[in-house]
Each structure stands twice: as structure tokens, then as C-alpha cells.
Length: 258
Image (cartoon, rainbow, N blue to C red; front, side):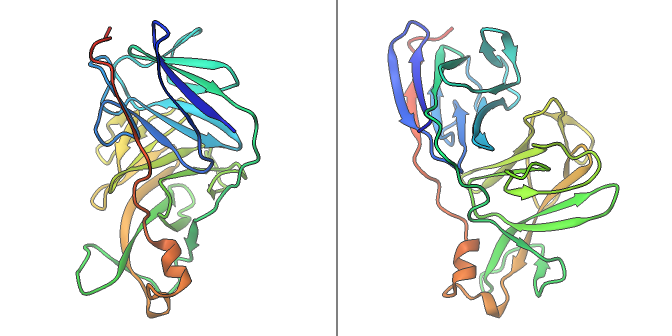
């Protein structure tokens, strides 16, 4: 089973834990991060650790210091057994015993013509769910996806949670991840996320009011009323409900900063 071992740069052990297939881990100084590393040289949201096609990757989320490796400072790192990446005064070691992964579990793609009413704001008297609206700018093709996991991989590769075909779509085009009730989007490739104003960034917050884009794909959140046939007591509705945040880790590195 893949695992992570975190130590100070002087070798003092801090934490080790097994990685769970199908989920992601945010790393940073923020109290919302799954792995909280308390040091001023570490950004609030520094990096995202996630799995794609059985391979674990670490991508920078627009941090100040970046990801330090033996090859230099990188934006993305494909992790192999015994590999390490330094974030501030912490060194993250990766070990992998190669275990079979499951892909796509927990996601439900919705047909645009289905009996689903798109709404702009939630209302207490109606059951609703959050959806991701994906649009290909060149072809106009649209997809609606129920957000049911803490992270979602989008791309042309068959191992992605949402597989899309079309011009300009990378094998791993975008990575969505959730911090508490807020969704963010980033890319593990060399491209950048553009918001409505065209401002580039490494990572952007998704919302109902504005559209973010990566290459030929546009992303936006929307709300939908759950039809009567998807009442909460039925199995489909249960699979579309957001899950609570899972386990997290909190490490104080203030006595060992850069």
C-alpha cells in the first residue's frame, strides 16, 4: 500500500500514514488542509497529493516556495518508490508497494436532458445538490457531474473519474478537490487556470457566479433540485450527497523554519 513519511529536514520523524486510493490530500499551513504543516515558509495551500491511474502525484498550488526536489524546484512531481519532495522545512517521502486501485467509484454523470432543474440558490424547502458543469468551448459539448468525492480527476485518460474526448483535452486535464464546503480546481500539467477575467493562476476556487477554464474546457458550479424519483431515502440520492471531510493531520514546524 502506498504510504507517506514526513520528517524535518534534519531527519527527525514527524508523521507517517497510508494513502487511501481514490482520495486526495491537501498540504499546507491552512487549518483546512488535510496535512497541516505549520511553518511560515509553507503556503496556506501549498500542494495537492492525488492518485491518477495508480500513480501518485504531487502538484504545487501556486505556493511561494514551490516543491523542492533533487532536480530543483518543480510544479509537478510524479512520485515513485523512495522519492522525496521538500516543502519548507518538511521533507515528504513516498513509498509504494503497488496495490490495485479502483477508479470512478462514487461519481454519477447526469444527462443534460434529464429531469433535473438547475437553480441559482439553495432553498430550505427543497432538496438540492451541487453539480459541476463542464463545457468544451470549441464543440459546445456539456457535461453535468454530481460532486460526491473529495477529489475528482478529469481528462482523456480512461483512469480519470470523468473521461472526456475532444480537441485540446489532456490525459489528465484538471484536478478538482474540496476543502470543507469549498471546491478548487488545478492542473497537473504545465498549463494554468484562467478565471472569468482571464487572470492566470495555479489554483482557483470554483463558484456558482464565475467560470474557470483550463485549455479548451470551462468549469462552473451549479445547483440542482433533486427530482421526486431521487428522494433522500432512495439509493441514487445517497450516492449524490457530499461526504464529510475525512481524517486530517496537524504538524507544528514553527520551531524548525527556514
